[in-house]
Image: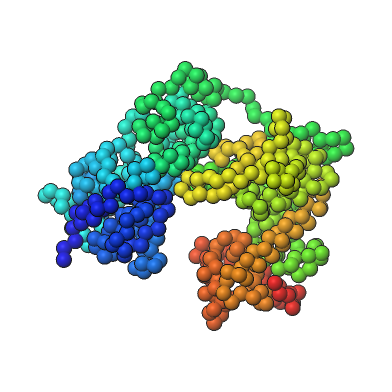
Length: 577
């Protein structure tokens, strides 16, 4: 039987008017499914119903494992069938239109109606499933003619393309691009986002990653198409006219933000008498050096950029900073006898985490601030960095290092980290649900992240100050290192206790398998299901070591060497978790 592109149109039309829900899961083989839908699930369901094949489901033929995703549609389009210009795809009934997910943008999938204007798709919560016009005024990346399907497009089909056509949108649209959109109109967008309760980052008139992320969050909140583009619909929802006409104050704010400034300084608290606190931070090229009251200096970080779910700029530690911060301590189990065999148990993992340096630091990824030998991340509520910071602030010298921070009762009567704003105390542990640039929702410590690292796309005085002072605290008080280990051991115990409930066959009696499981849970590179399968195999240790090896071979080899050393020493004899 001939498979035609029009077939998915005919099937999809029967679902027009049904509900859209972000992340909805759809059984592809259920012909009676009536919603809810999201974009990739809708197109994959239509294609399966029309052709009996899985498209965009993750390169699997197993329906139980199919996980429709715009990124899979994009990658499959580049490998099989015919990838064509999205402009050509609009003229072909049933051709797929794909916007790939990536830094600062959410992916999307639709089918072309073939009239160079309309699409059939699950568009957003406000629109649901429908047929929508003005497709040429939306951002697409590539078109795809599915393999094994015949398409009707006049006398001939367009030629395959090696690379997708660049996104071209009408004048007056704003989205994340290089070079960035700049000007008073962008200030108007940023101010409108802020009025609607979404933080756009600095009001600087530059449509950068933070503003793009804010637009995505706003679109999710309002049920709009989540494309990161400020066009007529998003402008209207923001309360702006279209095209966006900046007010005089918007233009003035942009000019002020672009005005040349003198050298930035890093404000630091004045240390008490006879206290060797950090009094200065200097930038030498891309490296930062701290100076204490006694004149002691140390390099602690350099500038680096990184892209995960968006482009970011922050601090990392290269050779110079690593050399200087090693003098403040590297974890060795024998130095912490109070933790018994647990100190040895965590040693391979800490060796893999920045070489077990207590002053390990980075501020360039989505955690905003990561610190310590275990690389505690600041974004996670109730664990990692925030637990470390609480225990630091309970020390007698805490106010000398961080006078602006203190432990105070929150609204629930629990002692939590607060910031003295000058007008009161702000709870830095308030948990906030945020939509990340890749569309995923996380609960994060947004206020703590903003205190430690206000901007994800520039080096802030705040992140330099916090970094230097935390490292100097390690230098002055060895208790800070013991606290790092205590928090990490407690975290390992909690992870293992939960793993015993979730991983079939895991008892904790074999310390080697337990160590591999603990390392995976700390790094997040394996699932309970994978670990259960490894334990059920004939060689559990080798199977556990293989989990994640494709992406983390170097780390796994480091942990493996540490395990071999422990086995040879006999120090773990009789240890169970």
